[in-house]
Length: 194
Ligand SMILES: [Zn+2]
Image (tube, rainbow, N blue to C red):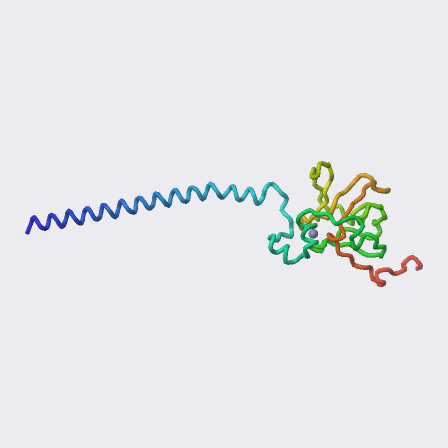
């Protein structure tokens, strides 16, 4: 009887040891897993932030694709350029305002628009410099200055130093990056007469 009890006790002890060893091993595995996670996290974070400016309007690529036409997405989000002379606002001489086609930010006015002969809508100044961000662009073997909307970061075009007075600048903008709103007669009141 006594001997049998001892065997049972030994058996129970060995089972307990086995269970302990099993859990200890599992904890070790979990620790390794969490270690790899903490190594990966900063990588993915730095990819997302990348030292780039964070904009007021932030959308995922999927959301941008859904809210823009194919052409608008290509130009605004992939920094594309429409073919010269094909844009809908190149020869637009109506009075009004030009807004960002991606987020509606007010960017340019018809007062600053001029015929540059370049094939793209051209302005010698934006409505307000705070609405435009400039980025050095060295793509296609050229050194240019890219202009993006300061609210959503969408590509608008480039700015060059061959514009007319008073700024000497030419903001060369894709029509597809803009939405034009015609000035209504109401805001065109003749205050000067009185
Ligand atoms: Zn915008």
